[in-house]
Length: 315
Ligand code: B12
Image (cartoon, rainbow, N blue to C red):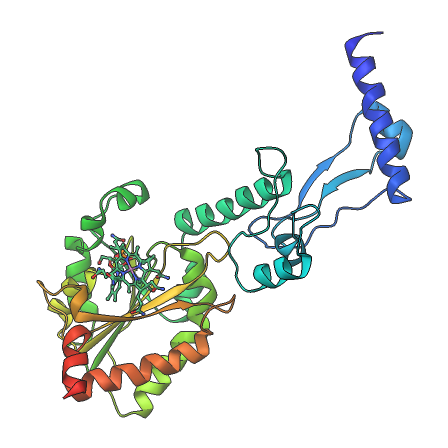
């Protein structure tokens, strides 16, 4: 028997067993997180076709779905209920079990799938549709490309020369509040949350009688760019909506970094932030928008942010 014939025979036998186990030829399950998709593999060999039909799909469950993600992998735990309660109390990877000294295949697949989602978030681009929906024009920092962005945070804190002149030309000067959107470390954070949070912030600030600057989008953006921006705009307060470093499980969290009168030389001690803005287990973006409005009003009331705001508010 040739090698190919033997391999076909083995494949045919495995497929027959699988088809038998599932009752009939299984269909792709699909579903799950869009950025990971289903982990399907299609059986196409002549042997497969002859045993279970050419449409047979061997499909593993999507490890990022809630049920497999939360499944307990420890075999015969001494205290099953205790372990269940412990695992239910956190998103951390507890009770995953092991196969000898190694992780279970499903733990490894979940880790790899989650890692894939973070890579998509970090290397992805904020959709043009979202930028257009809010009339955001795009400027860049002094970073040349995404690779440099990751290696040189200092360049992500400075506007490019072209950005400076575009902002100077297009933006209203000296508003009460300037809103800026930046990709930061997660494009998904902006795509998923901006449509909910931005209208709440804009409406809330306007209802409070505050004047708003011209919002825009900064590509390859770091938090510190707030200083460069405001040295052109001269707003009383600046709000930067930016993608946070993605975690292994939640990759679309946004932060709102806020500063009173940002200017070159100011640091994170002069800023405040609301973090983990996401509909996937963080602060819902609609609710977070309301916090931002409240916080900005506080900054304006005390003419301060960061540590100084704490001191001023404490009297
Ligand atoms: C990475 C990180 C750090 C790094 C930042 C270094 C770096 N180059 O990235 C290090 C380890 C230094 C750090 C330190 C601190 N951090 Co931190 N950090 C984070 C983390 C995990 C991600 C931030 C991120 O993605 N930013 C977006 C990217 C695009 O910004 P960036 O320009 O690359 O980096 C800037 C910001 O990350 C900023 N930053 C980081 N932490 C903090 C905290 C505060 C209060 C401010 C104003 C700014 C700030 O500093 C960087 C340089 O400007 C978040 C968790 C989260 N869910 O966001 C916590 C988080 C932002 N950090 C937090 C805290 C409390 C701190 C510290 C005050 C801890 C301490 N007691 O010392 C210090 C303050 C540091 C500072 N910059 O003054 C809290 C803030 C809580 C809040 N709402 O006020 C968070 C949300 C974690 C948490 N859940 O508790 N942090």
